[in-house]
Structures are given as C-alpha cells and as structure tokens.
Length: 404
Ligand SMILES: Nc1ncnc2c1ncn2[C@@H]1O[C@H](COP(=O)(O)OP(=O)(O)OP(=O)(O)O)[C@@H](O)[C@H]1O
Ligand SMILES: [Mg+2]
Image (cartoon, rainbow, N blue to C red; front, side, top):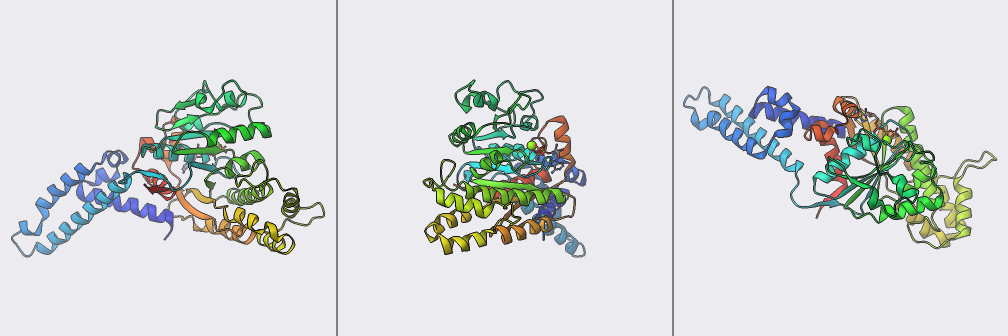
C-alpha cells in the first residue's frame, strides 16, 4: 500500500470513527475534526456505550446486532484516541540529529515554500523553537505563506548588505508560531551574492539559536542553492508527478552530490578536511562532463578509480558519499495515486548514478485547502490542524523527529 494511500485510508478510518461516535455531519466537517478533544471522545463513547452495551438489552434476538454495534463503538473509540495521542506525542520531540532542514528541488511551483511554511508551523506547535529562512533570494515569498501581505520591513538583505550585524536583528515572530527570516527580492541584486557573503550567511545560519531551522530554497541548481542544501542536516527534495519536476529532482540530487565532492576540501567543506589541490583536481575532472563529449563518471566509477589511482583519498571520498542522505517528498498527488512510481524512478537513477538510496520521507495530496491558503494567506495547517494535509505534514515531521 502506498504512503499516500495509507494516509488517505487513515483519514477515512478517522472519519468513519467520527461518524460512528458522533454523526455523519461531524465526520464530514474539517472544523469538527480540528476541535475534537480527548474529553469529547470519552464522553461520546460513554453516551453510545450506555445505549448499545449488550448487557443493556434483554432480547437475545437483538443481541447480535447490538454486539456488532458495541464493537464498532469500541473500535471507533480506539481509533480516535490513537489519532489524538499521535497528534500530540507524549514526551519532548526533537530533531533526530542537527537542527537544519533544507527544502529544495530544481523547479518552481512544486510546493517547496508551502511545505517549509506548514512544516515549520507544525514543528513550532510541538514547542520547538523553529526559525524559517527564506533562501530563495531571487524569488522570496515565504512570508506570504506565513500570512504577511506586504514587503517585510526587515529582511535577510539587511544582513547581506551589512545594514544589520546579525540575523537575529531581522528575525520576526510570525503570527502562526515559527520565527521568520524573510527575504525581499524586490531589492535589485538580492539574488546575486558572492562567495564571501554566502559563507558569512551559512555561518550565521549555523549559529541561529533554535531547535529547528527550516530553509526554503529557490528552484534551481545554482551553486549557492546547492551549498545551502549541503549545509543542512536533513535535505528534502520536493517533486511532483510532472516529468519536468521529477527529472529536475534527479538533476538536483546529482548536482548536489557532485558539488559536495567538488567542495570536499577547503573552506566550504563541512568535514573540516584540509585544502587538497590534487584531490580537488581529480574529482573536478571526473565529475564534470568534458568538452570531448565524455560524460561524468558515476559515483561507483569514481570510487573505483580513486581506489586504483589515489587509495590515500578513498576514505575521505567514501565518507562524503555515505554522508549524502537526502529525502524525497512527492507533492500534489491526485486522490488514489501513490508516490511510488515517481519516487521509484528517481530512486533507481540515483542508485545507478550516485550509488545512494534516496529515502521517501512522505507524500502530500493535492488539496483545495492548500490552493486556498495561497490566496487568502492563512496557512492550511493553521486553518485545519487535523485535515488530511496536516496529517501528511505531521507524518513527514515525525520521521525527522525523535522523542527525547
Ligand atoms: N499539496 C498541494 N495541494 C494543492 N496545491 C498546492 C500544493 N502544494 C503547492 N500547491 C500550490 O502550488 C503553488 C506553488 O507552491 P510553492 O510556492 O510552495 O512552490 P515553490 O516550489 O516554492 O515555488 P518557487 O520555486 O517558485 O518558490 C502554491 O501557491 C499552491 O497553490
Ligand atoms: Mg518557493
């Protein structure tokens, strides 16, 4: 069964349980689901059990029917209790490691900002100090998905142009929970940051005091975007079912892996390796397609040739390859369609070329709620915190979290 089907089936089960304990109308209402509490479920169970408990019936003829009904009431009670307990996990949730989550993908309009905003709102609702950073420097709009209708008074540009000394000074408390470091691409040149500015920004992001920092990236494979992605502890690549989107997702993964290897040593390295010109030159020549039409090596070919020609660098390169563990999220799936087909295509090419398993973190359906949120600027997860979309976002988050 597909992840998407699983989530849809789960929602169907929850709604059926609501219909059994409350009413059909309640089950159809997102508003009802949002307001559902443990106390309401317990009271509804007691009310129904009183009427339908087999011991309350005298005639044996109706006893079978009554037992079935009572069983359904019990099962519905359990479904709703589990649902409410999952929605507010016991114990303190923290990211499984690190604090930075990057949301990328090599195409515009696939839902990166929608996912960043709603994931951030969900993480903040768990009590985690969550900071969202709009790193789509040329097309900043994350603030819109957090309800800001006009240009922000303070933006990341103030930091990049040295009008303020720290990112803290441009961080604002959004009305929906997370803190926001927003962008302003109306300012000329905002997307064109040089190497030193990028390094300064990466350092400042690493220094943000937070439990989670979620980076919303632009939709291309420019070096700046790849470098932001590679700095993250959890890299999420978003795709939809469209060919352009999943081919873009694969190109993004390949470009990120090759960029990582090309920046294995020196200043941008996260591994702290010393600059090593010989290794750099070797990797550059192997991973870039040459003018002679020769294509880049696959990662397996690269590793084999390093083993042969430069065994002293083998462990450094292997560590970098193994440390590349991005996730995939498939967005905007139509009802009844699972993410496997699209995910499978990306996974099999990634395995062949990059020698990595790209894990499917989750999938999200195409929801009118989400489309509406882009118009009325009320985040979908805030408007309906128990909707199918909210459940999918919570499921994605739960795979990045552990209970401390
Ligand atoms: N799951 C979804 N269901 C319905 N509509 C969606 C969903 N995800 C995204 N959308 C729609 O797609 C639009 C584009 O989403 P979003 O702005 O998040 O894309 P993006 O990848 O960040 O694009 P860009 O790279 O241009 O910033 C949204 O305004 C929303 O209307
Ligand atoms: Mg965006």
